[in-house]
Amino acid sequence: MDRKEFLRTLGLGSAALWATYCLGGCKGEEEPAPNELPADGLILDLNTAQYSSLKNNGSHVTLADYKIVVARTTTGSYVAVTKVCSHEGQVRIEYIPSQNFFECGAHGAQFSTTGQGLNQNGKNGIRVYRTEINQAGDILKIFNS
Image (cartoon, rainbow, N blue to C red; front, side, top):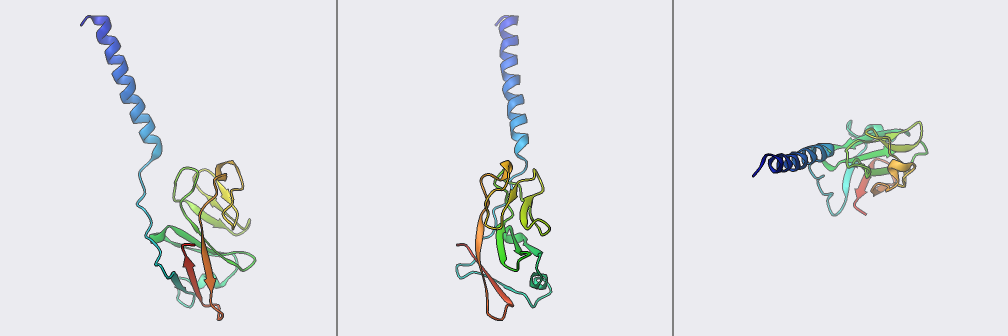
């Protein structure tokens, strides 16, 4: 192998290595998958300290094990959505009560309370879980569909 061929080979190998490093680094660390919801729904007792804030309009809680944010909207309805953003998969979705929508803190993707994307980064929407509140208004159930 002559010098010219050696340098060409070195250049291609270095470029491939560098591209792998750069492209792999953009993804970030993989998040573990969220736990599956029970088949008969996840029950939140709003009388407990952990979830009592959901009795107030404009409040929200995070269910870290399930990667779900549950909000009581400013109009009083309950909405549960995934915390995983459809834009780049970051687990940064939060409820913004002053705007009555959900937003990803990573890149500003915004989503309505129905999960519809409200801007370019949110164009793919996010998953919304079905919710039911009992007649007494103190037991909230969250379902996969």
